[in-house]
Length: 175
Image (cartoon, rainbow, N blue to C red):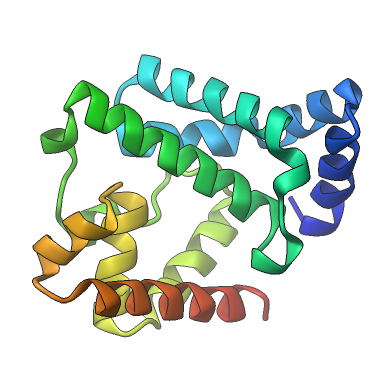
């Protein structure tokens, strides 16, 4: 879903439009649920994270800042943080694989195969450190501190690798 289509919906949601919220939910709930399920590995927890995410979107639509990324990126960050909270609460962290190679874009992602291939190609173009940090943080659901421990690098370095890697992915995917 393109940002140009989601942004007006989010603006309408900020004004209290239930119809816009229903449409946004219909368009994006599969992707949000897939992120939650990928991280949590449990259907019930993924459903809870998805529901909590959309409640936060309903209440926080006005807080979205266009300069910080697309609507979908904002939504994915909400579900990601909610999933991390649930992982900590339910202490299921040890069920998440720490192998960056095994947790990349897969057939379980709700994207057409051509888009999955494109994402995989763009990820492959990243520097190794960026790729590992992004895999661990976004596909493995690890916090920045856990990525620090896993890669044995300073927090500032990890944050830089992730930020630069995401910027590179954004450029690559927009071509």
